[in-house]
Length: 117
Length: 113
Image (cartoon, each protein chain N blue to C red):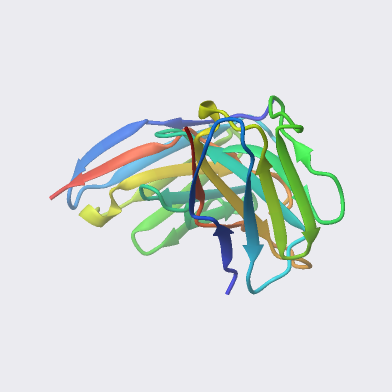
């Protein structure tokens, strides 16, 4: 149980285009999902907290107009990187917290590797 | 702001030796401390976690200790094996999973046969 998927697993896009990454909780509902970015040989940096039915909460320094987050259902959150640039190339990982339980653990997706050329 | 410091950044041990990784957190309201193992290109895997109401937790070869007063927590791996080689991250959060995880910088562990 507690499986989180991401799609696509990897994507290459041209500079200036937008790309959408999906994060799905497959066997549980999640009101809260988190989006992280991880550059090579670095730690996971939280970008934003995605709450179902409300606006995402962005961490300091993360441009909300560039990284659009939509959490339209209890099983799906999407991250859209708009006007992508090579410096946006990174490993993007989401996590989800099951609804309704006194859960501490976040369940991570497998990540999406974005390369902007 | 919230911060988690992790040391060492790299750790090299011989198979069978023990490995210890240490973290310090700044937010005194933190009460959940997970440890993750991440292999290259993969998702972080939770290997052990501890809540602030206990001082130590053990699971086979892995143990975690927590000193709330000093705001320190540590990961101990005994009888290391080559398959333990990976990057290990500590993290801290408040009040459970609905609050964000703050990650340490990571420790690259190499276990040599």
